[in-house]
Image (tube, rainbow, N blue to C red; front, side, top):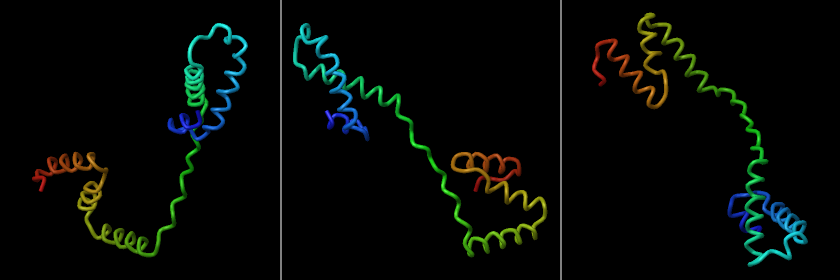
Length: 124
C-alpha cells in the first residue's frame, strides 16, 4: 500500500497506509460474514478513498517570497547612467524610449506594433 501511495505522489504514504489498515480493521467485524472476493480489492478501494480524502485535506505549503537582493554596484551604476541619459532626451523622446521597453513577451510585441502604427513606422 505504501508503494501505491508513493506512486500517487503522496509525501505521507506511511500515514495513509496506516489509516487504511485501521479503517479496514474497524469495519472487519461488520463485513466479514458478507464479503465475497479477494480482500486486496477491498483494501485497494479503501486506500483510494483515503488518498482522495488526503488530497482534500492537504493544505499547500505557504510560499515565501524571497526578499529582493540589494542591487550590486554595477547595476546601480547602470541605473544611474540610464537616468542621466533619459534626462538628456526631450520629453517626447524619453516617452518613446520608455514606451518601447514596456510589457513582456507577446504583450511587448503587440505594444510595439501599436506604437509603430501610431508613429507611422514599419515594424523593422
